[in-house]
Length: 148
Image (cartoon, helix red, strand yellow):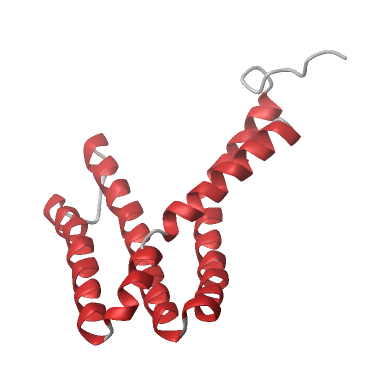
């Protein structure tokens, strides 16, 4: 059997690949929500409500952090390319730094209210890592199975 035409030389396959890979951010967001629900239920069952609550709180912080990071990177890219932006450079940097302040405040609040929830919070902050790993495995599968 002949090798398929590489996506770089076939415009139809290139468009299909572009459409597939451009949806990665939305898939990662959906994976984050699904993993949060699934893993918080598992944490509740295994470690109890305090750890599960800390995990959910960490997931919320991680989700907001991920969204703001995407916006900040887009803003930096727009500023670097000279495109018209709604936000000033100082506003982009301030929002970028605010993410870390919010994470620190969340960790402090959890630590003072319920120290048992701190491990759950820290685990929840790794939610984007798990979602991106799932997306990477899916992209490898799609590349091998469908040739995208």
